[in-house]
View 1 (tube, rainbow over the protein chains, first blue to last red):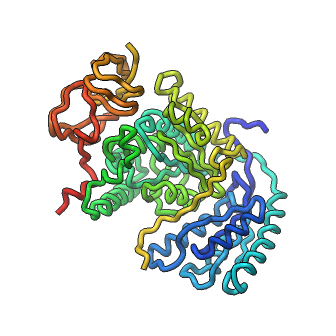
View 2: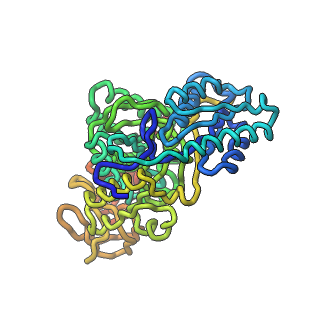
View 3: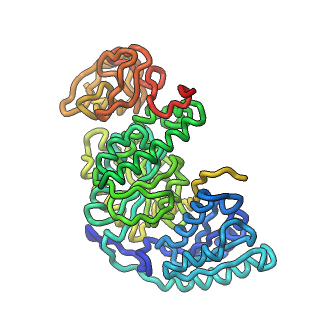
Length: 389
Length: 96
């Protein structure tokens, strides 16, 4: 399979283009996780989204969980979806299935209580999912323009090499994607604290700038409410060991990963962007929630820039690891997809390495597995803003 | 003289070590042009070195931007990190 500069080979969907082709098993609530997991074990090419929310939540918190679950199911990397419900949870499972079905894909629903318990629900679920997997197996990849891609970019387990090498390089690749009409989403509002003035200057208009500044201010206030120095958590102990001294330093390095293009839109967590180009998703700094949010917002691929190395992956979306730390590249080679550490020694330019990342994005979008997929990492978590009541 | 640190922006008063640096070592710092500095303390890979004398209360500049404030006088060549720099943001501890 040959890859030209601006195309990748993906799966056509009624809504978007998939870089992967899985049957999704989506618990509507944490209580349905075990049934979903066992169905996944029985059927090849199915992926369970094991998360911890879906009940005893209120208002905006519950809305956010619902939005994230719909987004997971609608993600173009899912060929079809089985929703597994317990039957008494706060999430309206029927509405969830209906919302996902609006994307044009096949959606079925199994309720554990209605089926008569665990074993019967598993049996019914396996029968549905194996049929879906058969259908999914008939799909073939074909060529699509790079503008069909939505790429989430996150940095995690950062050290000072992130700001010098892996983030600027990822940012260069982000600029290439944006110039070619693709969409790039960055998140981690906490890690914009101290760098918000730079991003706000690049906003499309005053409204977008205002939304960004308000999101950052809100996150800083939430942190201050705890009555302690944010440094107890941000930078993390690992960041500090790696040489990052303050949240400002971390943020100034972190925003480089999104490149230099105009900021087109600020979206809420798990919201589907309207604009193309560079998007900021309001989200916390913890990677599992942020990257799950990207998946809900339609990202078909995530680039993860890391200093110290973080082994992490999603159920249906490849998470590609990039490091600028030569020691991490060497010692944690099992988890790292692209090594850009030669930049530190001036042996490779940011542009050259950025082009490599861009090409790797197209390769991975066309089916090349990333390390996290090979090792079977399939994490999901949904950001929670309300208490468990 | 080996290049062992990078200065990210002309305005910066700190550089980032790209190797472990021993106390007393004279190293090259890469910017537009490479220059020399004698390092006064052991600096681990990834940590920062003061490029000039910084007074208590003065801003620490990296990427041409403020990354925090010195909590004590820092000499040129000394280690710059959490022991002598405080953040100006997210300071719930300073709130009443």
